[in-house]
Image (cartoon, rainbow, N blue to C red; front, side):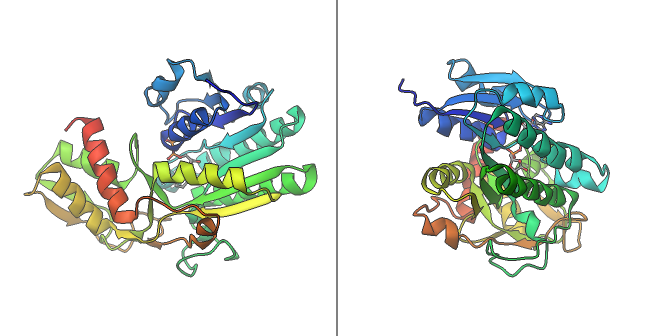
Length: 319
Ligand code: NAD
């Protein structure tokens, strides 16, 4: 296989989005190294690449500076995808996002600086905008006022990254993701609904009133957009929202999951309230004009991505 000289480190490469990013990088001829502590990742998601000898896997923890120092040696670019994926956890444990998000990002940046690696691609999130942002929310919106501890850790990480650009001549691609869904999903609303129905197919409990409405992006669309922008934009700081053209309500997702699982008699029950949990943002839609201006467009809009994901996960879960 043709290999160019680019050596990429993917943090969180054994996770949902990271595993798809690895497929893109391998296809593009990168030498790929992964660091992951397997806290929410799974080696099965990348076994097709590890077993083919296409990627190097290192079990390591980003909160341990030594692990990161080792992993960032002889690398050209770091794709920093690792984080605690569970936004709700912040309602109970208040230092997880700080450690697994902000401090882990500091460890990456500092190790990169010491090892002379200057390019970083970062998986940020739409939740940095908070809940009072205009919709669709453009990248130029500010101030960003996150309302979850996870959102704060992403915004803190972005600040560290741009400061390393300003101070140490780094280059950064920061991507604020909408809700990313698709094949190999291991968490999130569709995954939860399918598992709930698997446990009890007579009812489906939905957190909140179901009117929460967010934008969903299919995972392959997401990683292709990342690579397209990484390859075509070369500013010191390249900040892009990644999402689709529309939104889908939680109510509609519940209906689609019930329909696709075939449990037509399941009653959909709402716990009530305008959001799933404290810190959840009930309505979110990113402006994707800037992404579109690069010449990249998505293959799936929100509802089509939801249906496609539901079908993939039903098959993966084996229902
Ligand atoms: P994921 O949980 O599947 O992947 C995260 C990976 O990071 C896992 O493999 C986990 O084991 C690893 N990890 C976590 N902490 C680590 C540590 N301390 N050291 C080493 N590895 C560690 O989640 P995902 O959905 O694939 O998310 C990937 C990235 O995208 C995350 O940064 C997430 O915050 C961001 N993001 C995801 C979404 C989404 O909808 N899935 C939306 C916005 C942003």
